[in-house]
Amino acid sequence: MSSLIIVLGDQLSKDVAALKEYKDGDLVLMAEVKEKHQAVNHHKKKLAFIYSAMRHFAEDLTAEDVNLSYIRLEDSTEYDGIIDIICSHLDESEFDELVITEPGEYWLADAIEETGVQYNIEIRILPDSRFISTTEEFSDWAEDRKELVMEYWYRLMRKKTGLLMEGKDPIGGKWNFDKQNRKTLKPGEKIKAPRKFRPDETTLSVLQMVEEHFPDAFGDLEPFWYAVTASQARKVLCHFIKYHLQSFGDYQDAMLTDEAFLYHSVISQYINCGLLDPLETCQQAEQAYHRGDAPINAVEGFIRQIIGWREYIRGVYWLYMPDYKDLNELDARRDLPDFYWDGNTQMNCLSQVVSMTRKYAYSHHIQRLMVTGNFANLAGIDVESVCNWYLGVYADAHEWVELPNTLGMALYADGGLVGSKPYISTGNYIKRMSNYCDSCEYDPGKRVGEKACPFTTLYWDYLIRHKDKLKGNQRMSLSYRNLDRFSTTDKKQIQLQAAEFLDTL
Ligand SMILES: Cc1cc2nc3c(=O)[nH]c(=O)nc-3n(C[C@H](O)[C@H](O)[C@H](O)COP(=O)(O)OP(=O)(O)OC[C@H]3O[C@@H](n4cnc5c(N)ncnc54)[C@H](O)[C@@H]3O)c2cc1C
Ligand code: SF4
Image (cartoon, rainbow, N blue to C red; front, side, top):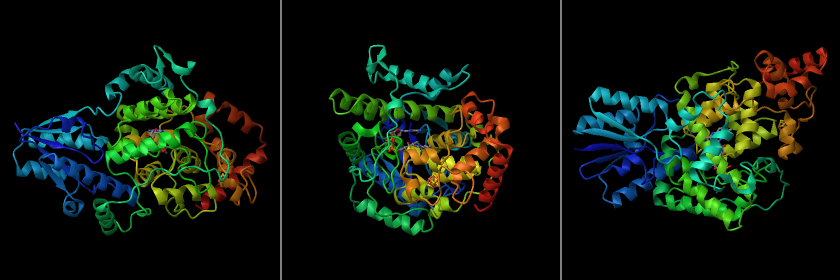
């Protein structure tokens, strides 16, 4: 009995279920691919990171005498994508079955099943044990619930893992310390940079290949300092726990000019690709709490992001796909402005976030949610274009995690499945949480007039535009009470200013 075992580019862990099935006579297939049916402009650093991590992982497998077929990008251009490559292997040799760990994209899971039918070969799609929950667990939990409140799912995951628990109770007497986590930072704060690595020979050749094959792709390829192996990724985590975790909670939502990383961990790309295990990551953070190296609000906040939000987002994706991808509750159809690519806008906050994204293929959660996401939502930018932008520009972006975060959380295009109200704000929120407004030519406090901040104008215009859909939402009642205080003339001026601004996009 011989199996064709597929290891995808985001499954780079020796513990991944399909690889654990490997035995003599099997063939493991890994391929660097450009999916021809996808129109996503991937960041050069993201491509280099994934291909380099794949090559390093393949080197390890080869050193362990695993029978491996590794297709490099240079040799995969004749194929339409991964399915085409799998088919060519099935054409060339006899296999009794095809084994794969659950892919992170709905279309691929679907296409693998179809390939099985086409070739009349048994397909085994194994659960991805790198997650704390299974997709079935999430759908059982979601069944009969009116609202999928992340906090309740998170508590279940705390009990399941025992993380930060004292018997049945949460350590510190509370499940969630988020209220303490909204401090702002002053410019000039000395913050240690994330752990960086010099590219080795393998990475250098990948950098050259990316430049040759993707000359027009978005973003700066160099300097490239990401971890590309599991041991390097573990060093990144240790560095974060030593230097940043203690302040992670306090400054989680803060933003500062020219500071991309602050106290964030910058590990999502490693967890998502298999270089770091999410549970072990949380256990290490928990140990820092028990050693007295980090306070409860920081450690609880960090662990909540991983066993709460990350698991919840995955559950939502698999529960609602494939229809989820087509949702567009607020009928947002405006073209994506060019400044999402070149950062060329007078709105300093957007220019800052796009320029960091270009440099690092990274921006932190509040930048993604309350700057680029907030603007796209307020301006009614086409949902699919925004999702493709997020899927392309961030090194950690894979459809299962990007889509519910963007379409659901940032754009409210799912009508409230992920967030019970739209995450929108005027420029005043950005002013409170950052120093971006200090060097902007707009005034976040002004909704009309020459200096009016587009976020502030569009916020009120959005409430007027979507009144029919949003006014009945309890969590929007304060915003609508505030809007009701405006005179008819005020509202007309806002609408006029918003229309003029939107015309310039
Ligand atoms: C519009 C939008 C798009 C996003 N797209 C992605 C994406 O494609 N891939 C991705 O991994 N995250 C995505 N996120 C979630 C989050 O922004 C990133 O996980 C985080 O910024 C990564 O940086 P970090 O590793 O420094 O995280 P930290 O702030 O240090 O948080 C620790 C870890 O928690 C996890 N995490 C935190 N928030 C989330 C979340 N909402 N969903 C899933 N995991 C979370 C990540 O694994 C992260 O590494 C998106 C958020 C928004 C608002
Ligand atoms: S004033 Fe408005 S556009 Fe300018 S940085 Fe502040 S929030 Fe952004």
